[in-house]
Amino acid sequence: LTMLKIFLAITLATIASAELSCEDCTAIGTTISNEASSQAGIKGQVDFLLAGGICIDAPAELECESNLPSFWTIIAGWLFSPEYGWYAPMFMCQDVCAARKTFTNTPSCDDCVTRIYGSTSYMADEQIQIQLIADLLRDGVCEEFSPDDVETCATALELVIPAALNMFAAADIQWAVDFCSVNMGCMEF
Image (tube, rainbow, N blue to C red; front, side, top):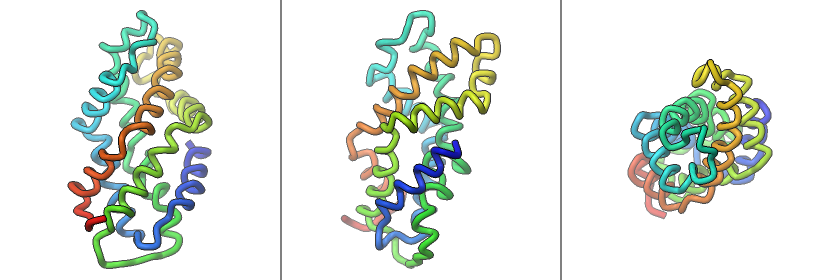
């Protein structure tokens, strides 16, 4: 997770906005983290993954379609944690907050979408995916999900994480536009 955090901080610095304040970015990161780790958010992710065919290539013994909801619930709780997950402000906003930008206006939709979609696009990076799998294994996700069969769980992680993150990274940008408009009340583009 440490390597991932450093990589995200560096790459997000390249998509920093001149208009986005630390407070705005923190609100965006906190809100999307809370949404993504909520019961409704996780259900939406599972539905998206299943509809996208995530289980098509999974071996039958993994019982992907029946196990994915509970398996992804554990993964999403870790992956999208508001404290240390993918969109956590301490990582997603490190560049903006270090610059100490403060504005009193609502962020523009463009700033919000650029920040979220920029971060999400890095989910397709193979090195990040490999590191995430290692971090999940190190943090005991398989012991929590399947204490009697950690090896099968590890195999499932190696199949699910790259497929899921690639699907999220390739998703139409409209979800980010909708999130920013509805959840953040951003100003027009």
